[in-house]
Length: 118
Image 1 (cartoon, rainbow, N blue to C red):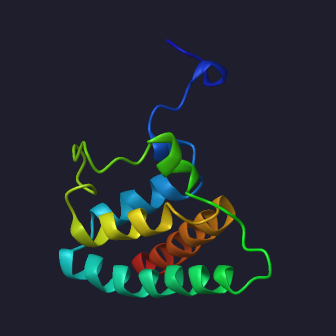
Image 2: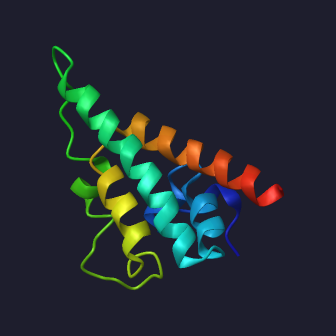
């Protein structure tokens, strides 16, 4: 049995804070909820992209996950790959700077957790 120190994350969302938690909560929600959440999150992602373009020297990014091939549409093995609204969130967010991606995941986690506790 491996100790915690020896554990090597194998899935792209294992290494991104909040992402595993967000996916766990989303998995329990209805498809309609996925569409509602995606509509709002995609607006935020678009606003971030527009603000980045308006900077004097916008940071260049193809997205860490996309460059490394860790979030690949080609496999479609997991539930979120086949779920159109969730797939769109992660596809759009994967082109953000890492800090922006983390902020999106943290915001989603906080909102989903609060909503599920009510």
